[in-house]
Image: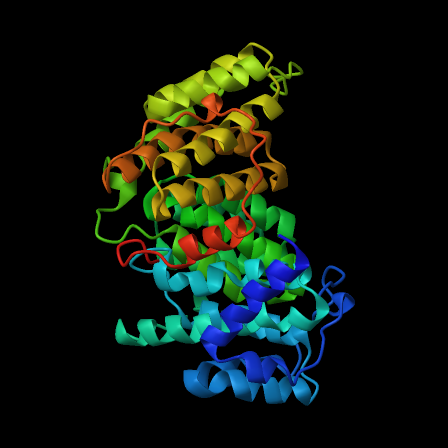
Length: 421
């Protein structure tokens, strides 16, 4: 999208939120002000009052009141930090890790949008995210006004038991045990150790159409920007979200569709070779896997990936097929389920490359393959799937219409009532 088209789209969005007159008074936001060295943010007396300000200021006043604080010297970094913390403290990832909880999930995306904007437009994504948080907060209040409780300090395990207790609690789907265990782990171990423990579980089940692993990836991405010192409440919220099985029996003691591929793929890991990073970049293998994923079962999908790995096919060729298949589903049915097959694949691949455990990485790859047929069937339950094959597309010399990108933006920012959330 050209700079003019992007600016026009941003300003039209600003107008819909009533932000145009506010943003014009703030001045430009330079690129260096939204890019930070890792860990630069520090807890200070500014953060808690700023979080409380976002929590308590009415939605119809929060934009202008925030703008006044920016004019008075409030930094982008502190505002981004407070926005994330306000979300994790005030928005419950129930009954689904989606819908109103997108107020938390989109914080990193809003930051990335700010980085990509022209200086004069950089405040807009964050102000939009603030308005989105207030909307989600209102919905949370209507659903019971949940708030992240203080840690039960008496139950926090000692440092040397934190990881073991966390794994045990996650295996049992024990919310209270996982809450105090992850608290101990965050307080005593670094971000990589915490990520490795949680990545092992964030992609194990298909509930909430991938939002659990999306939260894992986006939470760590945001903490890399604002500083690991803010991790404790975020990780507690993340674990609470990961253990969501709203409306169903405890998965540890029941057999449910959302969990079956995850259990199957745990067993399938033993069939992978010791040297599983293949070297054969093979477009034919990519095309073959896309064809398999078009109509296979979840277990057939992961089994096919294992076969390709054992044949020495490169991980790049396999990931190419997974991304292409996610895109193909979006071609077959326009809607929120198909869209999340793409965003979940992005999150799973981010977790794949961020995890240090070989077994966790292998598991995430197999789970991504198994999730795609589950996304397909979830989409099918919402309506007819077109018989389109991404491998049948050909290059075209027809020029793209000038307004094509804007039309697509309007298409996906104006969903039907059924697709909202």
